[in-house]
Length: 154
Image 1 (cartoon, rainbow, N blue to C red):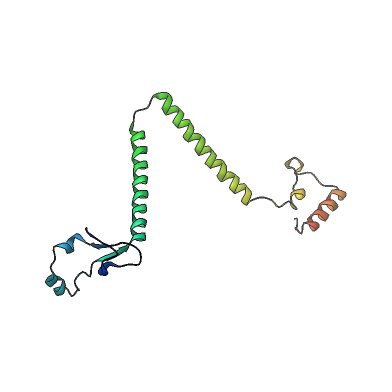
Image 2 (cartoon, rainbow, N blue to C red):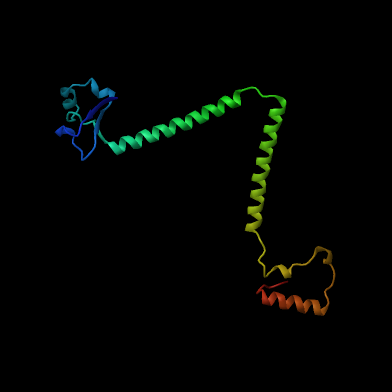
């Protein structure tokens, strides 16, 4: 990529209080003005002016990408090194703990989504009383609880 820096004192590159950089693509460096005119483009139509802030933003993005790549390379190198049986077992245990924690979190999230409202909890009965005939008093209590909770029981 062709790279030309213009100082603020030069009139052609003046951009309020900062340097500007003129970038041209490598393919345009060998092209002549006549070739540009043939293509219907003005001279330098492929040039891009970058302000100092834009340059800093691009540098920061490049550094971040390089750091991410370095971390990925380090992880790959660590995984590629041979491990002892004890190390491998410890890593497997850690992975199992993480997996179990994720599964537990998923189950708890599912339970919280399907939670019974607090007003409906007194209406639930033990499975040990299934098949037993409720007394008249118990049926009346249950009907009152259902009415209070605005629930219709069968």
